[in-house]
Image (cartoon, rainbow, N blue to C red):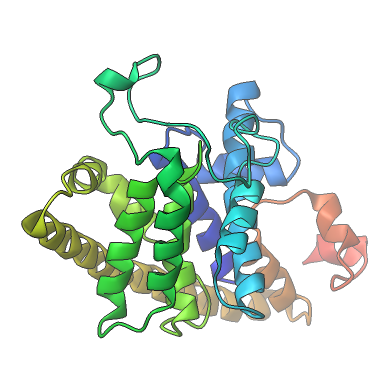
Length: 286
């Protein structure tokens, strides 16, 4: 119940780092049937929903088999399904040189140029081996994996979002989490300039140490924030549950409250069609 809106919020914030403008409220309203405010905002929302869908796809896959590059390509295909970037070979590792810079920037003026396409298969094989290795500190291992992925930049588009998505998936596979739900994007979005600068500065031992220190601090701060938010939501839920039972004396009060926490915005007809809910007149009386 708690994870559903928090997962959507993570999708919103991770996509925001890449330039989307849609808000959490807009996503909730879109899912409830409202139209998006223009085609650009609709694209933003669909990218966010794809991010959430890919994360859930990753969770299902990791229950049955370990992480591998086939899964990585599958997640990328879901991420770019029918949205911006759909023309950039979703689900396939790049075979052309890419670079990061302002729109229209030639490669000679790029802010970052990833390795040549011919090197990508070997670099990804090394990435996969390191993911599966057992290190003394898995959080340090995760910091290195995240940077390694962003440096390789193995796809033509979507690398930033996918790299952040791999954070909770790694923690889940290493059994540090019971669900792949760890929302790091809030910290990275608030510290976007340092996040990008630390990644681009990686060229020697000191810069790698600085990167790991930054990443571990991000995990620490965000873990506390996530815990505080979850506790606050639980406290609010218990308070509202007691109040709802007191006011309605109905067996359906708690299921209705659960629905509100899982999906804060929904159309009334959706509620009436829910098999867990009573008849329309009874719902109206609650």
